[in-house]
Length: 612
Image 1 (cartoon, rainbow, N blue to C red):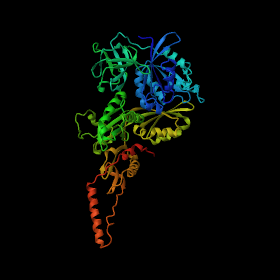
Image 2 (image 1 turned 30 degrees about the horizontal axis):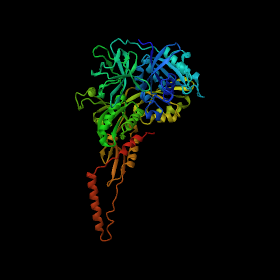
Image 3 (image 1 turned 90 degrees about the vertical axis):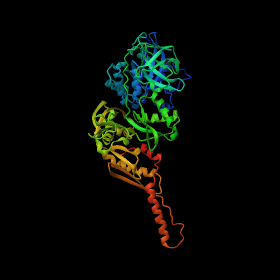
Image 4 (image 1 turned 60 degrees about the vertical axis):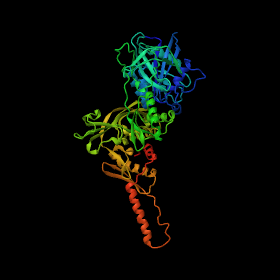
């Protein structure tokens, strides 16, 4: 057991000052020189610096000489604060024994603060509460202390106060870390057991695996085995995380670092896997890291069809670094692409931007949707009798095009989320009115203090991905914070809205939605498509139907060529003959002609935000 090691992370709601606090800790421990220092020094992605948010958890090793005269090794992991990146936080907490819970002195406890406390408690971590930004003129330290005591047990006097911007209280935070957070357990002489909590792909060295060693010792040149795949490798390089990766001869129990073993096949590495010594089998897998399932899906297609293979390799490498999204190949009217699953809309946007920037890809993204659970009528023919997801006549679909015919469906259920909203009491009326419009069910309301309220609702996930977050920020003037968790499925009166262009169904434009909203949505879609699809030589009808009933129609007028312009007189039968010939030609075009749907028509769906 290494008494001189402390593994900890920093967790907080978005924009409460985690990265700034990490900067000050790095400065005080001299982990970064004045020349190398900059704001958000651990956020090394351009996207993170542009948006001012942390997207990927970052690890760094610090050396600290405490007031008791001892020297300590601190492994700090800075985590994201947005609800879409909760999986990053969960992975970081598994590698730690304690955590700093940072709360803004002006904003107080918010939704993600609450969620992070629950995550830390699940992992049995020591939580050190820290009130940050005490220098703000509108800081209400006493009120925030009471809010913290409402969500966690402990002594109010133990709550630390800092101003990361001014560097106040940082020394006290470091002293609390070394004296309150327990040292890691485990023996360096025991059989090897190390957890894979992250990884990145290096084109020259292969997979670079981030590990936390719980027992035993990792050494350069030793043989290792991945428990989930049974594949064996030889360790080429070991190291620890300073501002850059620094090579080390070994990693002992309690330490956090990286290993390189010449792994070129990225499918050999799985986040949450346990690394063992093949000569000492019998170790149980370290099972504290649970897999997450994506709930928001969309299609990603290369603008240039020749980039399909490039996109495939990019997704494989990104999946190694971000295990919380999934993808599978599909083809549609947009060509060959991939159906991708994400944890939320911001996660979807970040993945798309990373693909475009890091891999120089131009992409078309289809409208986001969710997974639906379909219960089929007994006795209907199955496509695959031995398909596991269709046992009991229940299937799951993430693409409206895969919905079975109406005659085979007994019930359609949509995913449900439990939403926690923390907001000032003055915006309560506006937020509750918004929730009523979104098919929500009220669960509870609790006052943290006279000014702040916690609202809990059940809400269909499909309502959340249709501009909900922007509307919530609008009605609360940016003061409301949101957290959500998936709680299951709920059957509803849902139907598939099919768009027909020139009497041909376009499955890429299909959508599953509540029957009560179908007429409004159909009218809106038909009108918008009429604006973006170019005129043809024939009239092009745009129709929207549910089951076998057309509920909306718009017609794009045809170009009309004046075939009689060349006539300069003579009998009227000559004019009639030319017009009849044109009429016959138009009939033939209607019968044989096809309408090309431009990509702008699909992008219209992304811009579409339903307003009642």
